[in-house]
Image 1 (tube, helix red, strand yellow):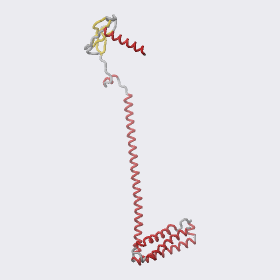
Image 2 (cartoon, rainbow, N blue to C red):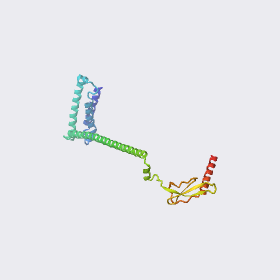
Image 3 (tube, one colour):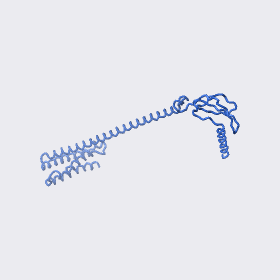
Image 4 (cartoon, helix red, strand yellow):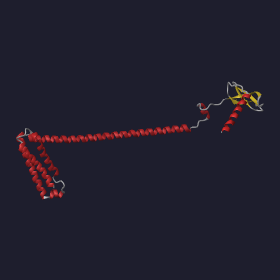
Length: 256
């Protein structure tokens, strides 16, 4: 199987050379036999790549048959190379073969360089992608840390605001609680209801602050809530208002 593969390379070399020999005088330029020249080089590469493939070390170097085949194939290859070089130089000039070899080497080098540049570019793109992903990761981590700090700060302020217990005086200063003002209310007169006959005590404080107490014994004075610019209460109106409230509450309880 291995010999057959190597002979395929030799067969391709021989076939290419025979075609060129038969048509060398009819072609206008080298392009007319370029395909066969490529075939020659391809056969040569096949021999170099496949020689000994699939065989053990002992088989490759210890087999007399394999060694003989390799020797014969190499001799045939050298002969065909020299024959091809001779007929091409005879047809297209003394330096034609060397120019072909040089041009082929340049193309191989260019192809290798193009592959190398592609690998470099691919590696560069991969590095750029990794760098971008790295900075995206850093950015996400930074945003996460900032959000974490913000959440902790908001919770701390919320807890402080919620848990802080202000004194009554502080609430008064903040305007959350209206401080009650007091004044001294003095007994102005005693009146009796014309309806119920109950006695009421009318008191007056600073800036027309009026208060009324339903009492039999009226103290001469007491501290009352400061409510300026008021009107002196009428006991009968107050009693009528109280009766109306009591009547409404009774009616409400019956409906319930």
